[in-house]
Image (cartoon, rainbow, N blue to C red; front, side):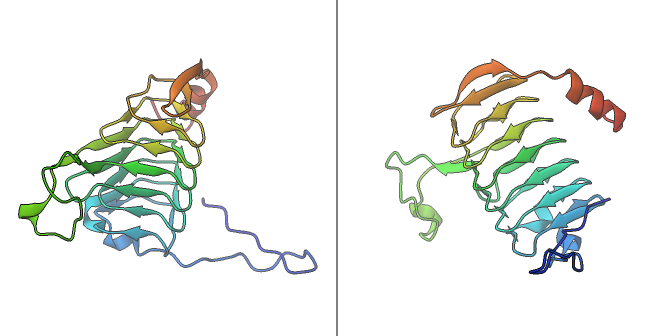
Length: 200
C-alpha cells in the first residue's frame, strides 16, 4: 500500500494527508496496482507505455515509449527522449534520481540533414533509434546521462552526474564522465529481499 504524503501546519501539527493530482493511468497501454504518477508528468504516447505495480513517477517526468517494472521510483524532472521508434525498458526494483536524462534516440549529426524535428522528413538528419535497458535492482543517481542503446546491468549503480556511454557490468558501481567501474556492489541481501517479495 502506498504511503500518503504527510503534511504539517506552521505549528508542526499533522494535517490531512497531501493528495497531489495524478495522471490518468487509464490512458496507459497497461498498468498494475498501487501506482502514483504525477499529473505534471508528460507522457507523450501513453498508448505505448506500460507500468507495473508499486510505482511512483514524480512531477516533470517526460517520456515517449517506456515499459516500467514493479517497485520502481522515477524521481522528478527525468526526461527520456528518442521519439516513437525508441524505447526505455526499466526492470523491477529500480530507482532513477532527479534530473537524469535518458537518450534513447539521437541524430547522427554527420551532415546528412537538419537535426530539427520541425523540418520535413526529407531534409532530416539520420536518426539512430534504440532501446535503453535498465536492469533489475539498478540505481541511477541524480543528473545522470545515459546515451542511446546502453544497457545498465542488473544491480548496477551509476553515481550522480555520470555520463554512461557503454553497457555496464552487473552489480558494479560506476562514476565519472565517461562512467567507469569503481567497485563491486554486494547483492546477497537485495536478492534475499526480492525473493521474500515473490521475485526470482
